Length: 205
Image: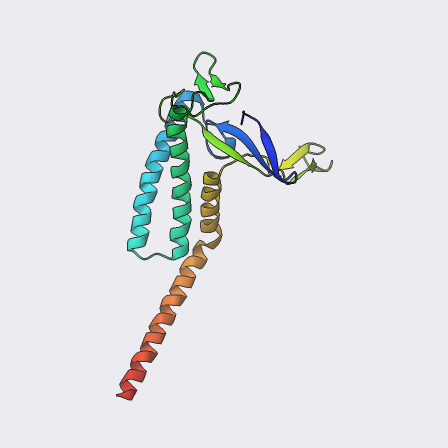
């Protein structure tokens, strides 16, 4: 596929749309060349920290929901690291930063996986492809600042790694307290059941 090429999967609201993202999740960018290096380093250290924290959670027998949430976040971050690290050395061309113009330059045509490489490790882009323009229209005139302007939901193009991170973070925000409450109730129930079994055993003896 060439940059910007797309095809509909389900009607007009689920589209595969090919873009190369040099920055963060959902097409956000972070300050050119130094931003790219900083983001790559941050991702690497973040994944190392997340892996250690997950090991701690497993060792301390944290609720499964918490472990699954952090596993999704870690897997998503690792997926984007792998994409960024290897994309630039596997393909013959791709979106690359130009110091001369101080901006990212796109390419023409279709890139091929021939291991020629167009960028050093971690200088490649992350591929985004999932696009859900579910609702589009215009804001009512009475809406401050945006009255009458066109809006589209959901505008960003993202990938499965972004979705994993978002789902993991969302689970923590919405259900973090519930995870620990359910675990506490389960432990209490297990202790109660164990006590009942022990009492029945004593009585039968």
